[in-house]
Image 1: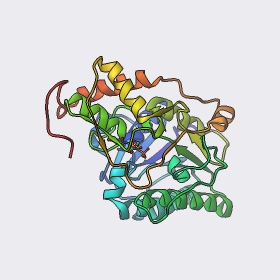
Image 2: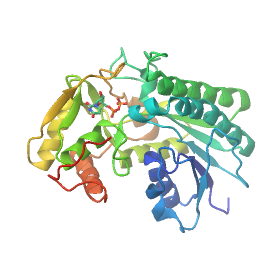
Image 3: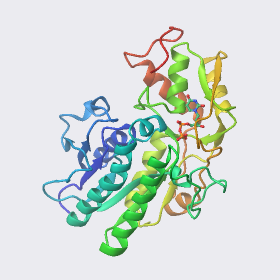
Image 4: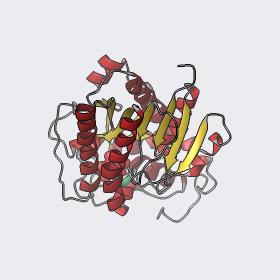
Amino acid sequence: MSRPPRTLVTGGAGFLGSHLCDRLLREGHEVICADNLITGSLKNIAHLFGQEGFRFLKQDVTEYLYIEGPVEYILHFASPASPVDYLRLPIQTLKVGSLGTHKALGLAKAKRARLLLASTSEVYGDPQVHPQPESYWGHVNPVGPRGVYDEAKRFAEAMTMAYHRYHGVETRIARIFNTFGPRMRPNDGRVVSNFLIQALEGNPLTVYGDGRQTRSFCYVSDLVDGLFRLLMSAEGEPVNLGNPAERTIRDLVAAIEKILGRSLPVTYNPLPQDDPRVRQPDITRARTLLGWEPKVELEIGLRETIDYFRGQPDIGGEGRVAAPPA
Ligand code: UDP
């Protein structure tokens, strides 16, 4: 092909989507970034405006998706993705996972493009198998508050496989585990952003439950590398992407204390309903099929993220006492 590949990123103004746009442009792709900006932000892609090969479309991907000209790759990343967001936007979350995935797959079929679906570790729910391999079918409460996200993504995976099997569309499914880094929204409610903002603003860290629940935190550059490898691979079955280093929420508090060089006050709040007790990816498939594994240590990634938040105009300097995040 004499021209660069043309690639659509839905949710391209979001946390992961914007980092993907950066990477794809670096790889020489022409990038069309579509986002309705309900959780994404133009701030995340401001540096790309005016760059050759980049175009932004303000578009709700649950509506008909019209893209003129050829498209080789589609990365379907549009969705509210933090528990606070999908509790606030339950219908939009269900619609983008179902109708939005249908539209993205329809476009992939029409353009003969390869589609990569951003799925999630939430398809495993509150898992009874630990760590979670891709072969595990999960333990999800369909009618609980998290069901809107979990079931939307499970439906999206089923729809993706149906388009692959029935229409022969080339598809890839990434099951993404907890990821953090610059461009997380300060108020997205996730544990890493909450804790860092609380620490920087001199407020107590809000630990939910007893803080013994575990997560495995992957730095964004590692994740984006895994996504790009998966996109370029021949692997059509789901692949877990995440950092297998499992930590309790209390470990996370300790890691932030170590970086800031002081102990941090903590308040204990009730554990949200259906909050998974444990989560850790089995990344054997990613290791063997993609030659991928995360490289960035938690502490290094946290330092980068702290620097990012410190550079945001609306976030207080260390020690400043501000109102708790809304
Ligand atoms: N959590 C917490 N304090 C917060 C936000 C989250 O203790 O201020 C806990 C939450 O209950 C969960 C874990 O941290 O056990 C990760 O939460 P997050 O919202 O980041 O994402 P999840 O992995 O639950 O989708």
